[in-house]
Length: 196
Ligand SMILES: [Zn+2]
Image (cartoon, rainbow, N blue to C red; front, side, top):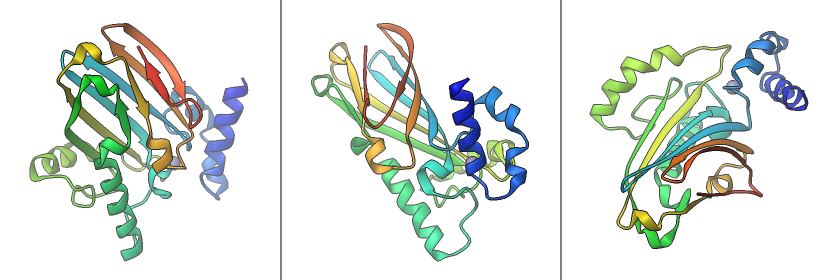
């Protein structure tokens, strides 16, 4: 109940228009788009470590529409660059010797160009982008980071440092699937290390 109330408040605060508060039940049921919160799925499979983020764009960018001017465009580009510098966002166990292999970014509010995507992903975004569009003026950002680890057996933890880069992000609902099993956790700026 407490969590429901908090989610409601965050949802209402997101828009200054009263209309934003109408689909409250929807927001609670899906818990998918609450400003300040995001989902992160972490999986270790063999020597690959994958981190998949689904976040309200507001958490990362401060707005959820296509950039309306040069300043907003520059802001979106800066966000993309920060998201692509994954070594500063995630710190896997050093002994596992993990190196970033790929980053994919997608958002219905931002063009693949602003997200720094290549031609191939451009097609992909065009196919899927429309489906997420226009839910009460909100937009998400989906990101996938993949690391390849030279000594995956040493991989025991990931420190999530993205809270430092994105102060708008206050809670991460995490699901992990690793050789150690599956589990859920909530990370915050104060509690930011996942272990397995
Ligand atoms: Zn929103």
